[in-house]
Amino acid sequence: MPPIISATGLVKNYPGVIAVDNINLAIPQGVCFGLLGPNGAGKTTTIEMLEGILLPTSGSVLYKGEPLDARYREEVGIQFQHTALQEFLTVRETLELFERLYQHTFPIAELIALCALDDILHRDTRKLSGGQRQRLLLALAMINDPELIFLDEPTTGLDPQARRNFWELVTLVKSRNKTIVLTTHYMEEAYALCDEIAIMDKGRIVSQGTPEQLLADHFGDVVLQIPKDDAGSKIFESGLSIAHAADFLEIKTSRLDYTLRQLMDCGANLDRLRIRAWTLDDLFINVTGKSLRP
Amino acid sequence: MMKKFLAVLHARNMEFLRDRSALTWNLAMPFFLVIGLAFTFSGSPRDIYKIGVVGGLDTLARVAPALQATRHLQFIHYDNLDLAIGKVSHQQLDMLVDVSSPPRYWVNTTSPNGYLLERIIWGVEGQRFARQPVEGAEIRYVDWFLPGILGMNMMFSCLFGVGYVMVRYRKNGFLKRLKATPLGALNFLLAQLASRLLLIMGITITVYAGCNLFIDFNMQGSYWDLLLIATLGAVCMISIGLLIAARTASEEFAGGILNSVTWPMMLLSGAWFSLEGTHRWVQQLAQLFPLTHLIDASRAIMNEGATLYQVMPHVLVMAGMSALFLAMGAYIFKWE
Image (tube, rainbow over all chains, first blue to last red; front, side, top):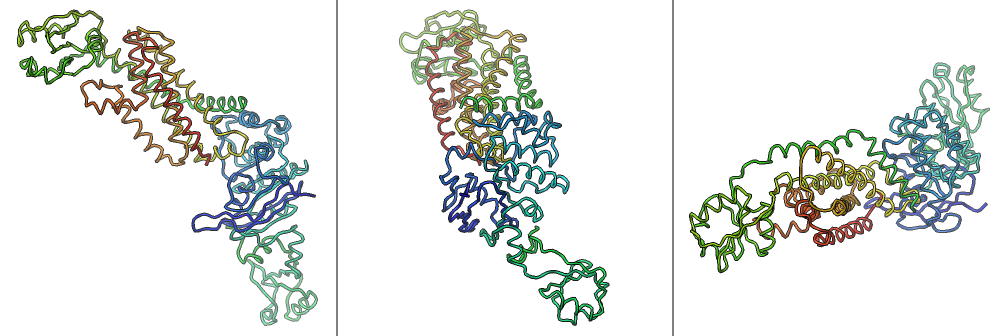
């Protein structure tokens, strides 16, 4: 499938800083593409160049194979990381304001239902909770029924419940064959929503692919977790690769049978032994050498 | 384009009208000021008598040295005799003397100050000056002051109302959100201009009508002409506000620039006191300010019954400034 949006040789320089360094992307239609990285990795700068909000120092962005033009503004939806709305307007009035800025629009009633805004339609936008506000901002990003939607860290600052509600909403949007470009530093969010991810660090993409493919590519081994109390005193003399994690010891191994025998030889109690799956957090640490969470 | 313009215009109007504190302040402040000043200044005595001089102040010192040496008299040079006679007629000057040959003086027969000055000129210069009586109603201080206070209120509302709002929009990211839509910069700026214009004209008309209930002030000319002048003046000052706020996201910087524009206008546009008698360069500098043209044209219409044709120079200057400032503002405008 041809990409709905692509970037070639994208560079953004600020005085003394290379914020984005030669990024190449091609995002197919209908996928949810995640840009992951810690604060300062260049995610927002990259997404804003893709949105056409920020001009690149060099490189190009193509939408459906064409340079960005006035049509692009009509056909994409954007939810910024930091934004404000016109004050003293209700949710409905805000939706109506943005609806009038576009030629082609999503039916407002349908949008209200989709984003679960019915109960807050007449509320002043300044009085919305974090989750309600993000739902409204997503509705505004979709008001022109865009084919391509940019969501820049949409769940940052939300409580876990509101974050999971927002994921459900994004999943609903995805099911309408929309292409979503999402930046986040929540790994579980990327894993739950994204079909493809790119991990950024220091302005570059350091790894890219489907989450499953990346985990398989980077981790051929498994992690065994055993409570410290059950490990036995001789375990540290066994030659196994052991790391401390809270109340557990984590043993990384590619030879499961051999490792289990070693543990039994050390007198470990295996009743509470668990095998932990590799996560995108592990992947990020593996490819960048640093923790993803700020 | 019109749909987008009306959408932004409506949203901005709603924002202003629902901001009760700002709305109340905009309505109440000029009322309090006009009423307070009317009580304070109407009929208050002046300790300096103003005498217009045609023919040169140097000539006055040679022709009428005793008069020129009399204390508590302020002599103001005029080139235009008809203009100066008009000011005697409206008692903006207490007397006018023409020191070219033969010497003459004009005095308003209904003015107490003119009566006293006539006794003084007879006393110090004898009967050498030929008497030219003039008639006409006095323009009280409140008549003179009202156009100034209305103009000044418009200036503050236009400049700060637009300037600070734009900077706030830019600082909190609302402009960036609009940039992501198909809305164009000129469309957005025109909507802001129209919104503020509607609001300020509504407020000004309300204040004018309200003052009319409490204070019996002069209105000699056409209300339509006055409305046009006020509209042009407001457009011009809103355009300055848009220009000042076209790029910055710093409220401190915008505030500094706005103050550096409003203070000279407030002091030198003739809102509080007449610039007659000040240095020529001050008067020329004042011509650069749209508030000067707004106030001068409004005073001419309200107090002298001037027609639109007579105030056309002010109309043209304000229209030209509006077009220039708006074009510059749109050209340098940044959403972020």
